[in-house]
Length: 233
Length: 263
Ligand SMILES: Nc1ncnc2c1ncn2[C@@H]1O[C@H](COP(=O)(O)OP(=O)(O)OP(=O)(O)O)[C@@H](O)[C@H]1O
Ligand SMILES: [Mg+2]
Image (cartoon, chains in turn brown, orange):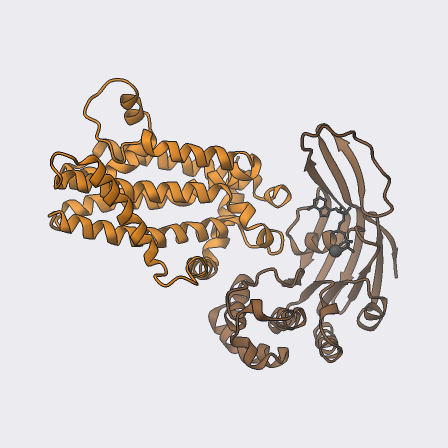
């Protein structure tokens, strides 16, 4: 059964301080995690004591000001970052859409990029072959699919990325601010695809600054502020 | 220690299962490097010929067609270029792959194998050139070539470990990129790539005996130029190989989850 469970998860980024001659004046910021020093290193507490639980069918919207820790939380869920403290247990196949251009090679064609993206996500060549036409149809890229990726507009890239990431029906889909680039008709289509996914007992976690998008797509909403959970409804 | 090794083997076995990824990416890399050129990857062959040619012309003065020196330089350059290229590219490996490392959950060893693969493909062109030079210099193909192959094989086996060790070095100490780059450039003169050691005293003696690269080179070269089985060279190469692999596994096991925070 698909599920996500986080217990008191925290994450700190350590930054190595460069040698500098300038005075160490600091300004307080309303944004971001908390900056502090430990020894010669600066550390940013990006997530602080985050706990929540999601079950099959949940669609969680992550909101919060810039630097609240949304992207960091998604990357912890995906497994890119190991948390500095706390425990995570995740059941289900996870796929993620962060930065649209990640995993895409500018010189290769859209078609070739689908193959690469599929291989990176652990698909077999047969699975990729099988899904290829569907991905191209869904993205509505037509003949552009055989042009190099660098010739795509941002929205076209977003379409390709979304179509590829959802084609193999991941059980858990993580998304970070991706959708803004698509036009209205594509956003509608994307929403339907996410509905389907959630109905098949999947989990979606979507970070966005677009309140109306969160309202349309999500069933739960979590507000982060300076790395802490401010509210969860 | 056991946990570290388990972690390392876990990373490696995941990467092996994803072998299609690094094979595909390595081909893309080679393609990208030469996409807008007419000769494409053949430039690597041209490059190799130019270097070997220069050294043969400059250093063979009296007896311009000494075939054993031509073979000496041709094989020396082949191995040395492969090692320099691999090592200098390894030091910046994780920085170059930063967007992938921060955006996907691919095991680190995938990047290691991608670079290994890329270096081997590139060396394939030089190898073709080397064989051509040997044939032109009058070395017929014989059973000694098989012994050389053994030396080459050991180098290939050592490559992923070398890449791993230098990639971690570069991630932990960014300055090492420049140090290693410089050392490798100087290293060409401290390694018997184009000079022949014949028992001199002094710097050359130490550069010959205390330089691991010497043995990597001699293991491939001696069977063809001297017609002997390079027992000593292969033994030392084997030990170096084991040592580097042990270090690589340890680094991979202990620090692979840290890399994403360092780049
Ligand atoms: N690679 C990094 N190194 C150091 N600190 C980082 C790094 N990435 C993020 N941070 C810090 O972690 C905190 C949370 O960042 P994060 O990217 O998760 O915010 P976010 O909620 O996604 O913001 P935004 O709405 O701007 O996308 C911020 O204070 C940021 O400065
Ligand atoms: Mg963000």
